[in-house]
Image (cartoon, rainbow, N blue to C red; front, side):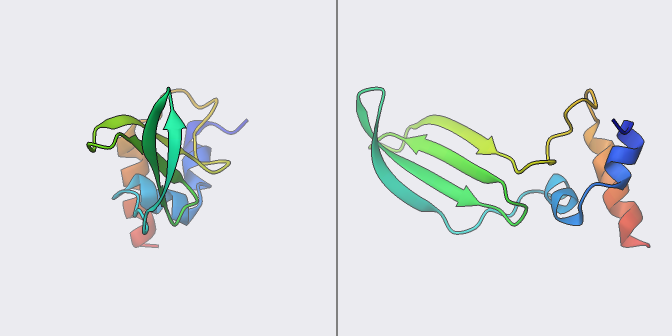
Amino acid sequence: MPNSRDFIRDYPDDYLECRYPAHTWGKPQGTWETYDGRRVVVVQFPCRCGANRVDVLGRDGERISSRIHYPPGYVAKGQGRTARARFRAERVRRLFE
């Protein structure tokens, strides 16, 4: 398993751009579903990196849940807690390559 320095150096550009400055959520799509016995709308926002944000909203707009599903390789599993500053520094380094 690569160390965190190698992991960040080899991190794909699309993923890094979502780490800094942030995800660019695309046009949402919604579906009506039943959640915990309630009628809700499930709104999905795709991102250029392959992540998908899913919000579950009540009829009144209350956010019942929100989560993000990440593509394989996005999450730094086995790397411990990787500081956000390290991703920002790598993004800036690549600007000047």
